[in-house]
Image 1 (cartoon, rainbow, N blue to C red):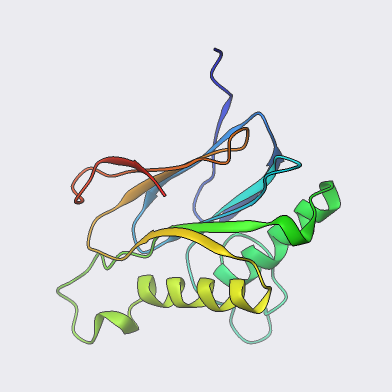
Image 2 (cartoon, rainbow, N blue to C red):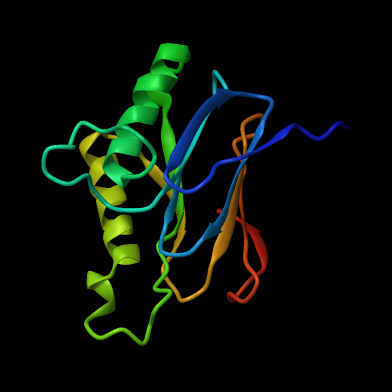
Length: 165
């Protein structure tokens, strides 16, 4: 069987596409990889989000840079391509605490805030969160296969090295 084409989704970017395609977000540390998918249409999106929310005055920004805007933007792009809003589900990975030596509680650091914002935004849009691999102090690479809906996480030093969420 032929492997699908691979496309890298860099930091602060999101990509919406239709199968067959493998979207890859490499090097997720405190950044959050956000997958949205409509399994019937095989339309999906992957964001590699850097920060939880846009600053005041830029709330409507729907680039991949901000968790909330990326989710809203991907939903709009997916439905424009023919995805059914009621069938979309999500998975997330990343949100690590890459700088454990910094002072202050871990839940106030950017990785934890990214995860919180994703959960809040998905809940507000009634999008089910079917799986996640978040937190810890190690980086991840996320691979999303639009043909199957599989979301694979690869790590170098985490508790596992290659698994599905």
